[in-house]
Image (tube, rainbow, N blue to C red; front, side, top):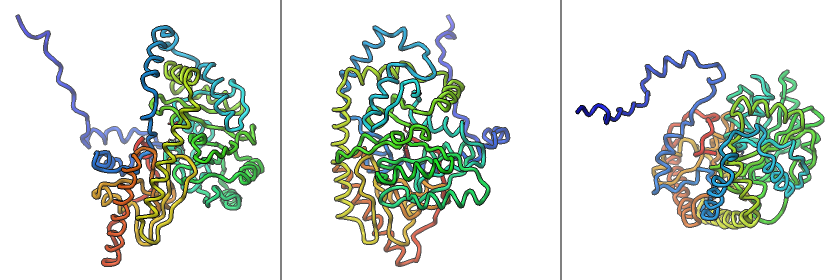
Length: 444
Ligand SMILES: Cc1ncc(COP(=O)(O)O)c(C=O)c1O
């Protein structure tokens, strides 16, 4: 008898030769030209080794989730409601979840109807769709400087031009916004959107002061600029202050993006958009063309979680954990950082934005930091205009307080060494090119 039937097929090799890649390149659409993989992605494979303390990634710390009761819920969901949970659903998302999302948003002062909510695969998908709907190549999007790397990646993918508007310790500066609008308009360019992260900014760690909220909304209204409010961290404030969502102050000119990634679990990829009716209709058509519908099972898991678990209590647990980690980071920065450094003091969220002493280039220093077993994200990834080489983002969400303290100590040593090199040789090393990077879970 031959053994023909039992032969296993040989696994194919990945096609990585330059010859193969080149033959595709000629066929790519022009819009892909700006889509480049992060130069630091390779570095992150090293940074994810256990001996390296990563202060880089924005992974939520989901260790405190009640996994056993969630597992029982998911099992019940499939056994009892499997015919629905494993079926296609509506492009807008399941009605029950959309109602619950309205309850979640009410915590930030938003009054909304479930018909105006659309469920997405994370707010990253919402960012992609909003840009697709509103931006032609060359249109301008105003965004804080620095801004969320994943948003910049989407804007880039649709060939929109980003103009950064500076922040201070109270967030986006209204006067700078006025000046940016005037400058862009004088160049004959069209401004389509203001993209803003008002609460516990990624990467800035800054929150927009309450009096500035209405002022910024007013400026945008006056100039016919739609506001995209990205608010994944709004419920993760540490001192109990609840900031009013921009959408709660202006229901007609704000597209609001929310997410369960930071308050529940990012792996489910469930977020949402709340948009004025006409925009919501376009969003649904766009979502249908991209994915037909958001994953029904995941939506039902989130919905069950919200109806059967103490999700507010879980958010409290998250807040307490992140506050402890923020405190560990701030106190060790205070203790170890060399003179000339400054940093933001976030009241919530995941991130501290650190400015380094004169002479240091955070992008050039990164490989040396990784060699010293600590990783961060260079500020250059959060700008589209080459800025950010004097800054870095440090995240305190994932490592334990002990690891954070050790990471900051290693980072401070790396910086001190870097400054010695600069003093001796005038420069510490070659700077690589800067600019926006494609979003990746490593740098989100
Ligand atoms: C400001 C901001 N917007 C959007 C996202 C994307 O979140 P989601 O997991 O909902 O796609 C992130 C993730 O880090 C973020 O920080």
